[in-house]
Length: 225
Image 1 (tube, rainbow, N blue to C red):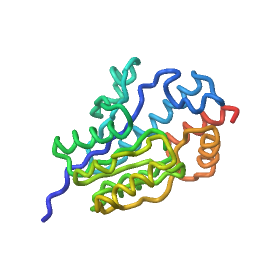
Image 2: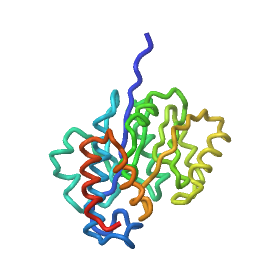
Image 3: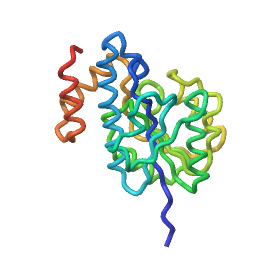
Image 4: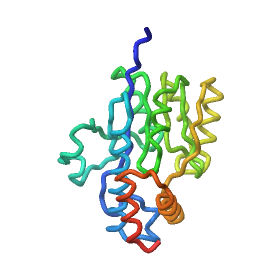
């Protein structure tokens, strides 16, 4: 019988500090409202971690940590928390993957907090994949999820982070390296005002939403979008 893989799911998050989260929504929302929105996004991300089966859950927080949210929050006691390390997103993900592999994990998936409506089935599929690399394409040209089996962190080389070419450049690296890739269904991030309006419409039309999604929708309904 094949030995089960040791697997990990990592949520990349920012410390919830006014003026440092969801800054591309500043034309629509003030800092206090944006912070409240981000806390809903964080809750959705944590709910996804709790819903995943057969994997250890981690939260990787971007420094500096100036709030108490990740320091003394009893609701986070079941999660292992560490600080992201690196100058850009690629370096931070590379080091998170390498650290996880060094700790003995054989399959690792990273998600962010920008896709609060993401189906947990997509994460489970990435964890269960036997491909070396799994990508969740986002409609903005990036990806909402990346999963890795062997140490193929070279796919992060020479990527223009924060642009619409992130997905295509990562795919090109994978082809150059001969890495076998599984592509998940396309989903969306919420970064700009139009994304937030789409999220509200989507949640409003979703019939089988959970408690976290319903709470987020109620908050969105209080905003003038």
